[in-house]
Length: 544
Image 1: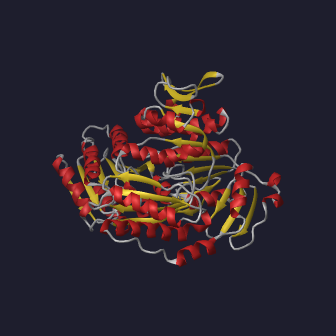
Image 2 (image 1 turned 30 degrees about the vertical axis):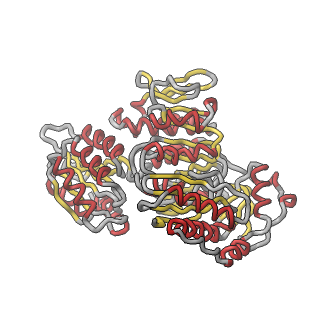
Image 3 (image 1 turned 90 degrees about the vertical axis):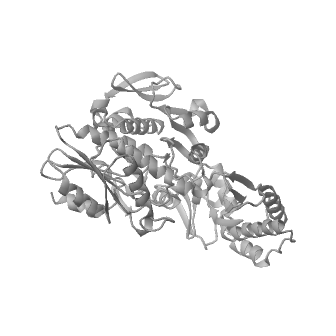
């Protein structure tokens, strides 16, 4: 038996609505029932507060969660690891080891007086409470109170609750389309006169101004936005990694959107199949007043009765037959249905990111954004204007479907597509641009190392289905090897592409791959850059 990971989870998560500590184990043939029984017995003996531990089984392993107060999570991980050591002893037929008294002393020392009372009062007043290692904040947006974590907290009766503000909060998750959809909702909010704060896997933006670059699709980015005093509406991209590693940043939100669920990142954190991944995504629905779901996603349709009340569900996509609240396309028109009946708002042809219908995944993203904006009570006029004006340019939606003129009649399509479903969609869009007689599609791709060989094979077959003249496979850099040896990921991709009859070359970087493909291209050709992450490529194309 091996410990794969041990960590604290600071908010609502797959195991529970409350914080806690989790250990993930590889059983390596150990008896799961013996491990669980010994672990539970150790938790019952040592946990210094009432709590119901949670066990999740996965292929070859276990995830063992212990709930606890947010101010005691670090030493709680030590207690959880002690319980695992007791399970190891049980497997060996040995008596359980004694708990180091320093663990309980550390739990007592970590206690922040008054925090539990403040948290209960915040829930009662429907005001966000944000806690990290440095600051404790009540409220969000223009009206907040903050205290350094080491400062004594006031009693709930001393808080001027009427002066605190809560702002509309929307969480956006799913396998694909999260960033595009979240950006579009932020644009709609801005057109409605709001000051949106947006987190994504690319950056934090306030009122469409970038304040931090990087992946902020977890709790840290969410807290940053909610603590900005200028923000009066938050759109928080919420990735599965953040949900699994740390949980959600808030205990309640106004709306949660799940764009879709497909095979990606399987195998991480004991998430082995798409239905379990759908449950991970649905954590956002567990804290939401209203939920927006994809009517064409079978996983979400099946989960809907479990994760949301029917009257609080907004559907997008499909033929509009599902639910009383829906956004869909009928006869080329975007249609919304609500309590006051149906209304046609604009033609799909007037939605730039749909590329005249050649990007059906972006039609879905546009509907998802409109449905979420509607759920947030943003007006139709702003929704329509947002759909009409938001483009797939590097300004509006960087790295997602950006078409660039590379000179000499050659175009480049830049996209972040990084799994089989996304690649299938982008390949279809790319083919729609290759229309001149004799024109060819050329592709470069690199993939993170934490994808299985099967997932890499599906990506390769998706590319091959587009009939590219050649594909240049590249590495994404040391930070994205994620457990594989240098060159191993690209070798799997190249072998799968070659098996599908595709001509393959190799390059050391995204920029080097682009240069190879541009040099081989003729007027009318399109170069598709998949998993575009290198700013050097943007700089190179900006010189044309």
